[in-house]
Image 1 (spheres, rainbow over the protein chains, first blue to last red):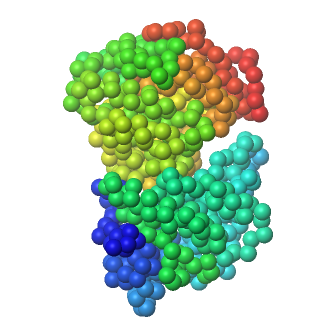
Image 2 (image 1 turned 120 degrees about the vertical axis):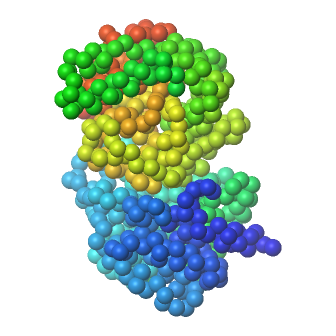
Image 3 (image 1 turned 135 degrees about the vertical axis):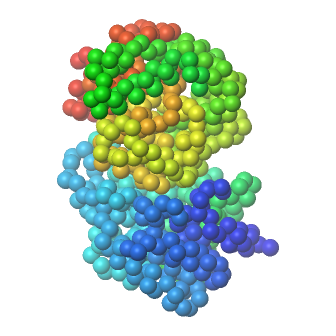
Length: 291
Length: 339
């Protein structure tokens, strides 16, 4: 059996699961599982994951971080992607109501702005999405909502357009992305693979004339190695793939990461991320560069 | 813990009386007396990561009146600082040798030891462990790691009430621990001046509830939430990695400053105040220490029992950024500036 098939089997077997082997089921891992299972041609398994998310959805449309924790609700974005993927896999429209309610919630959710200060490099007035309610907008949740809303058909919505501006604004001047700050007290912050991969994934298909975008691709392409840790590697490969810069070694690195995970007690989160970064046989909401 | 261990009796009493005082049920002079009860702080100099760190830590804990037999069968959670690790900046994060040495001490005393951290800026905890070198050290040392960002969480009433937060979510490993040991790196902090034992406890707060960065806490006030977290946690103590430290633009991008120190104590405000003095900062001007001094422990040098080295003998002012909110924290107007 090919390692990729083993990986998909592991994802299906671990669903519903969480971030940690013994941890509670969590929305983000299950959403990634739905997406990767749908992309792998496992509509039944994808539907089980999508159903779990539908059951977790609250009356207002939001989906909390775990089955027990209804807040914060930033994984609502990934739930939208999961339902879209599950629908695409089985050719039905089973989750259209879930998607619409989640979209409505997402368009109302806003990160907090703040007046610009010389000590902070990024534009604090741009509205994106935050990790938790009533806090500032940050790069990763904004990337997830931008991606989800584009895939749901809202690419031209003003919130998405402002989200794209925010993501571009948060790219580091010398390449890559930090968790969301760019300059603080005159110093440029550190770039990391995971947030850089996520922002590249979210900006795929956008017409962005900004030198920081190719610099981010260069940073990420040059920073990956066989030792890059699982989540960072998976997000980085996702981002580079949709930017038409998938590394030639990507598959072997993913296989090595899968081997490392298999040697320990793997979590659904890491397995599903690795599976999502596999070469997709057909365009999916995750890997597609266009909305 | 041993109920006769005076370091913990003091802290519990302070917490209890602090609450009563807030309710107006006891006279302030009583609180004032307890606030100024004596607290031991141990400082060792000439330390290195290849030296006898376990012996130093053991000596330090004993010098602070900690009872070894009180750890028998107890769960000890070591909490290092792995905020945003990078192999290029090893002086940002707690050195693995410190963690292993502390674990050896508590295991020798019969405790069940684990290591936990909720990295504050990066979601890939596996990356944080790899970049800091801590993951490999824990594996070699047979130590369990708890990813505090993603564990199950429980809600606890905010016992500090310095911020507007009614309660605080804490991860399972913290809630189940008998003692949580803060193992910070001795660093400057570009917003609050110094980060040491108390501020390091931001890293027990689960990212899955508070985000990356833990912006819920920032919006509720960094000094206030630092004090709240420390007031709400189970029993705590601190072992400070002051060997290779960070000055200038800490806690991430500052420069290395070799101090060769290990600082130990069970009263975190007292330890942090001592570290601030060593760094050339005035602890009474550091807001979270000022807040904590009301109910969590004294920061008044007159009431600190210095064990090992006197802080005056190892004092070496740290560079701090040329920013008004930082310069006002200086104990004296001397010292170089960086911008």
